[in-house]
Length: 112
Image (cartoon, rainbow, N blue to C red; front, side, top):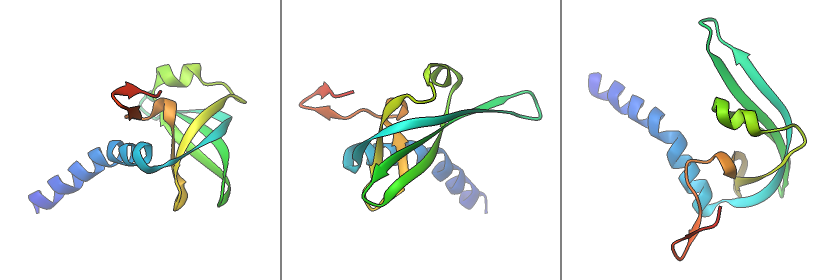
């Protein structure tokens, strides 16, 4: 049972970064517009930051949220245009490129 819980915890920890890596490598870029900045105050005094954005894809207009850290949240403004990278098979699976865990590279040069 402990092995199963350990595996589940490892998957939960690595899902986000691995998903970002796959999106950067195989995803499609689009221009997103920031709609809202949201800061939720937790019961124990912590704050969680989100940015809500929308972009157009072949699947239609997509609304999405990304969780940000405090410093990233501070630089985002409503109405701002940012690059989003999305899964062409499921555009709801997306992330803002600027805040992704990975960068695209070509011939050893960073593109971002």
